[in-house]
Length: 315
Image 1 (cartoon, one colour):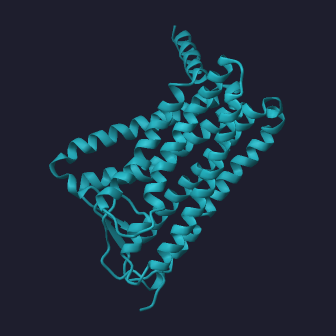
Image 2 (image 1 turned 90 degrees about the vertical axis):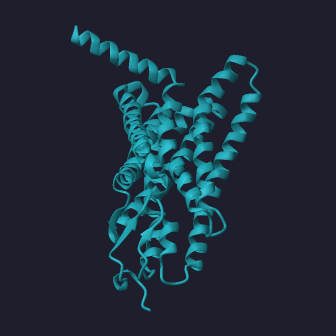
């Protein structure tokens, strides 16, 4: 059988989504819809609040938080509207090209966030371990280069995944038992043995996740050592406070990725896979604005200032 996208007989896939939830789908739909609106409004609010304050947007830490919130907004718009459609209709037909595009965007935004979390860890390490050099190291130009590298690496790394799927033949069945188009469900539908493709993509994912997680771990080891050496109790609390939000996000992000992308076997529970997918594509973007805004005095103060300006304008 000939392989390759232009020789495949499948022009579209059917995504069955949450087929096992049965009669409780209306409640699940409303909960997911509410989470979606709260996530988009929460992340956009954090991003816009930072952009509205000249002092915050010129501070590297808040520039990175604003970028993270923007990323999460894009990420959840790639997945959740599609999940909602699956719940509403029971199943959704999606064209081959659109399915691959969804998979590519999902991986691109996820990898971009992965590198962004590394940059944020590096920023905190410089601020705590080398505070006197912070403003000479984390300059506006340096931050722009770091963020540009993030987006570039994020959107070029998944090209290998995309090409590997394009080279596979699909001749039926065309039913994806998942909540959106992703690499593993697509590999299961190919007409040929995908063991090599699975191992190749597994090793690539393992390399990216392991290397970046190792970097984050090293930076936090340095941060913790520096904090423990501080003689001032107030300084310790402040240093821990500035790192707590980011560290929480890192643990949630890498924990979910480890379960879904670097498992060394192809066969696993599809329902378990769906739950993990909901966790990293819905819950993490939902929690991020809560983690950063509720614990951050600067963001809360900016919100209060804008609220007071609005009240004065209305008066």
